[in-house]
Amino acid sequence: MDGQTIKTHPDEATTLWNRQYIKVMLCNFLMFFAFYLLTPLLPLYLDEQFRADKDTIGIVLSGYVVATLIVRPFSGFIVDTFDRKTVLMVCFFLFFICFTGYVGAGTLLMFAIVRTLHGIPFGATTVVNSTVAIDVLPSRRRNEGIGYYGLSNNVAMAIAPSTGIYIYHVTGNFSLLFWLSLLLAFAGFLCSTSVKLPRREPVTGKPRLSLDHFFLSRAWLLALNISFFSLCWGVMSNYVAIYGKERLGITDGTGLFFMMLSAGLVMSRLFGAKGLREGRMTHNALVGVILSFAGYSLFAFLISPLSYYLSALLIGLGNGQMYPAFLNMFIKVARHDQRGTANSSILISWDLGMGLGILAGGVLAEYIGFDAAFRTVALMQGIGTLLFICFTARFFERRKLDEN
Image (tube, rainbow, N blue to C red; front, top):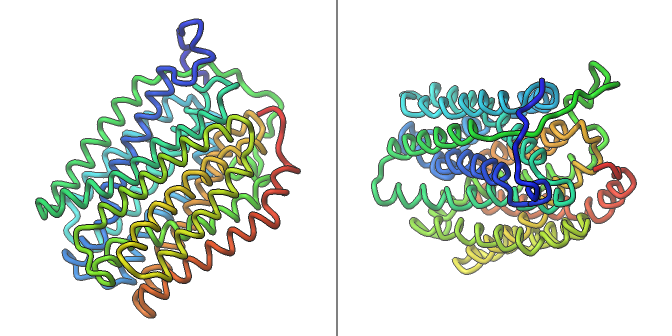
């Protein structure tokens, strides 16, 4: 099915910040803000509300990642096959409506079910929305535009936890946060209904069924490599609040941690845009993974409030350089009719690592302590960095295609 034809100003075909691109970025921001408003507080909620221990918390919180991993391969196939506007609206509506489940979940089992089911529309919507962003970008500005697009979710993922933590400290009311996330998700859904997409011609000669409909096998080493980095992010983003409270006695400073993380992400995206525009993706990725390794090492081995906050800035700077570079690399090794699959593949890889990180972080914290858990994280980041330097960069250069 074809999408809607956009009536544009003559210059809009070459304008990076066109109206549809801005709408798609706003949709993405609202989706991630609604979701990550709750993320750092859910371990505290499960602890206070249901008296769950740390490994149980890890299992409950990793449930959504399992659901996301299951749905994302099919999301790439669906978004490459059917009308993207319709798919976007349906997925966003289901994402929004799932927030009502948090309000009504009265037992730990019900909460675990709701959290797991929420991963299905979250996983699908992230794939569809990022693919739509590529569609509305002018081809000459695509690399740069993909980098800026990531700002919308990076800023949301960094600011939303700070906002959630602040609201909780002021009100002590988890239900208020659940309702606020519901309203933000609804605003994102309304925004998605106004997006107009260019007409897509049917793809001819494409095999009816193949592995590349569900996962971009040409990018397998890129996928493996980014999973190392997302494992580290999964541990840090989900357990930093409870770690800061138990290990450093920081009860109201986690918001500042995420603000520093946000500052690093924003600065890095802005500084990295020129490199992406010039096609220096491997350079950006290398700078990013080294900065991240420095940040995780500082966090794990120098335990003090100063290193706690400085590590957030370094991790933000690193991930802000690394992730958009990897996303561009995935797209560069895919055919133009595989954009949805390329997007779903990097997200599958990220979620796989993140899910393992959430689960492993809870188990490690329960049995050997947070210190050992975060030292393991620094080690995994170091392994991922060596893998990129020794193998992945050359792997990408051999496999990239000129058509994208």
